[in-house]
Length: 127
Image 1: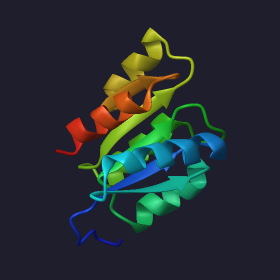
Image 2 (image 1 turned 60 degrees about the vertical axis):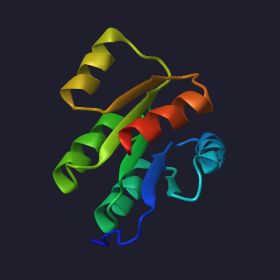
Image 3 (image 1 turned 45 degrees about the vertical axis):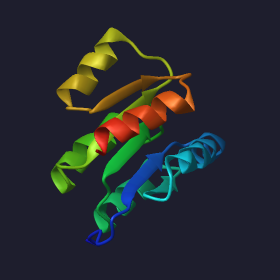
């Protein structure tokens, strides 16, 4: 596994809608040069990327084909337990929020949310 050796905060953003993932990644550029965001458009690609590289933060959509966001987070907890996580959900519910808490998700965002809210959450998690 590739270990991060620079001072940049590495973020992996996962959403099966490329337009959404790219838009969010562009919005995260406002965080500054200390943050680097990579995108994955499927759970399989995300899992491969998580197995190859250490990330400081995983931001993943819940509703994806094959493996949902919680599945990815649960696998990440085995690979890299110290990596912070944010789960984005389109149709949240108290039951899903409980599942996210049980999976020790660090941040939970219901869509739609503002980029400012996401950036604030990221800065809080990656101090």
